[in-house]
Image (cartoon, rainbow, N blue to C red; front, side):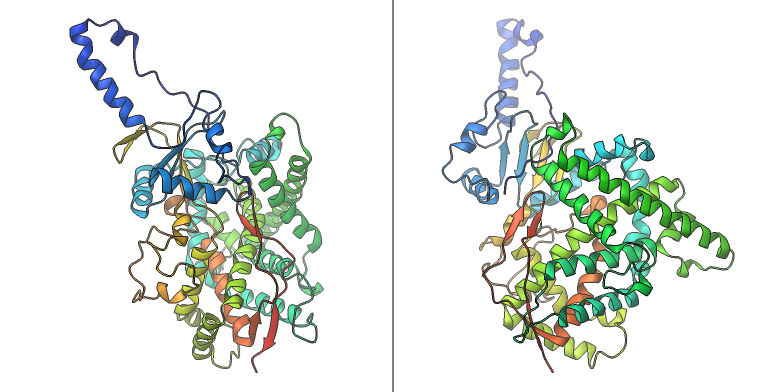
Amino acid sequence: MNRRMPFRSTKLPCLLTSAGMLSSGVKARPLFRRLAATQAQLQLPGPKAYPIIGSLPAILSDKDFDKQNTYLYFQKLFRTYGPIVKVEFPGQSPLVLIQRPEDVKMLFELTGKNPVRGGMESVKKAKYNNPYFEKKGGIVVEDGQEWWRVRSKVQVPMMKQKSLKTYLKEMDQITLDLIERVSQHRDDKGEVTIDFLEELQNWALESVCLVSFNQRIGCFGDEKKSSGDTKLIRTAAIDYMDAITTCEAGSKLWKVFPTKPFRKMEKSLHFLTVLCDKALKEAEEKLANKRDTVSEDDLTFMEQLLLNGDGLTRKDIVTFLVDIIPGGTNTTSDYAAVILYLLAKNPEAQRKLQQELDDVLGSAEGPLSSKQVARLSYTRAVIKEANRVMPQMFGPIRILQEDTHFKGYILKKGWSVLFMNALLGWEESVFPQAEMFLPERWLRDKPLGYIHPYTILPFSHGTRMCIGRRLAEQQTYILIARLFHRFNVEWKHPDMVRDYKFIFSPRGPLKFTLLERR
């Protein structure tokens, strides 16, 4: 699980100025006392660091360091040094690790006006190399004014519940198609014989393309609903995300010459760009024909961007579509796979979930409604508990844009702060019975005690919150409701293994057993 975080290089200013060193003895002593106090403020706890090589000797010599399970080392750092830890890596700016929810809340507030995330340098380079994008990388790779110029326009249609409800019926049908497909590929004991993870990827891709293109692409074999070569679209989306994780988490040789993963990223990026540009042209033509008769409530996602995205160019919209299609495929399918696995491993929680589904859905005749989804409180708790037990990432990162006073320390401009609040999900002091999967802890009455709202943030927070959050949640509610209302789901294999590069991803193939409830 070796992960190299995207840090920016920075130089610390010299604390002893030439003026101070040349001052007279009488005047110098108060100055030196002030400087010493300032130096003390800068000494954040953490493993010993050296010039150039940083904390690397301390990390590599630690018997508990395991590059395949780096989170264990981070946990040890917090146990050893406390809730705020500084680590330095060769050639990178200092990294400050925090995890307490009150500290996370404070840092979000301190960086809220200009939340610079950095990273995704390989994606930025691939886009900047492509003349189509005109040196504008979109909300995934940009920061500052350029990021906000696009984000402020696309977040309204993407995050508004009313917009997504428009697609609820079709998303429900996509989920039913998924369930029908996997149910037809079971052995005599009910075990699904095809890779469930791959089918979840098809399900997620079909759903995100529905929103992006306002049509289905035929991931489940219905040629009448297919809008092109579905296999090529799926391959491009998966290859694009695989290339990103390899480039961002592995060596940075792509900065020197185009490595194989980087070339794969560029190839997939080109394919997706052509695809999205074509889809946008079709949307423009349809909109031109009905512009005077269509109501605001009937606008598709792309039509909302075309009509209401003042300041957005058509290339801005294409860039955004290119980002959400692969991003919404891998992350949502991984997210869903973990939830299904945890419910399969915890039959008591599954039973309580099914009781709620029986009460809300009844005979489940007809499409799922938004009112029914809104009543799924235990389902919502299941998703939150899954995010606690098996998070997809450690937490968001911010690069400080100015010197920041924090908890008696001075965090310097250019330093990175990693909010590792996901690790708190496994702490008994924060979550009683932390080893157990207990969705009840998230119900309104909080039977296991108060939970700080900044403890678990799977989609980040604030203006840089994952823009696909509402879409992913709606997809997942539908999947859980439909699958567990019809089936008892079991897992009869060794524990799920997840690989960590940029995020935690289940290692396929995944094999679930589906047994009809009635």
